[in-house]
Image 1 (tube, rainbow, N blue to C red):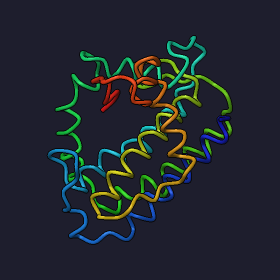
Image 2 (image 1 turned 30 degrees about the vertical axis):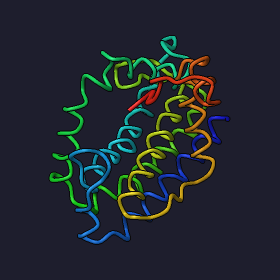
Image 3 (image 1 turned 180 degrees about the horizontal axis):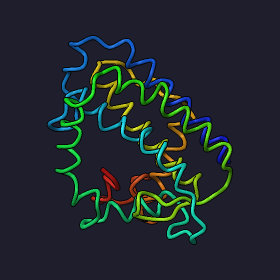
Length: 207
């Protein structure tokens, strides 16, 4: 998938987020989610950090060589037992709850309605460059966009489940997310688990 295609996919996902957020009631924002300790507003506050973060990433173009060629390679590193996905889990959870109190729902929705789309427009002008990924890696911009697609897709499913809705996520977002996740898993174990040929504790490959 080209970087332009990925940006179009991310834009479509964030459009669904924006449309969903504008229709939520106060009771909806208080709904529990399947993420322990987060109501819908806390989950949303966490997710809104991605369009905001992307608006920063587009200003972090670098000539340094890539430390990771793909989104999957970086996410696999993040999700090892002592990786940041595990070591910072409690801090991330606390941050989501704190941001839910700190920002209005209008501000949280506007990250998807305004901030994100503006950053996507900037990214289209940059083309195929590399970026400093929050000081943790150097990634091709398109691979950073893939992480955004995954985050938007996985958490949109969380939102829709919390609201009692059947999943309604852009198909291209689902397909790309599935592809990235499949590349995170060790290939032999993934193939054998997916085809019922092995009993394994492979999953989850990321959290």
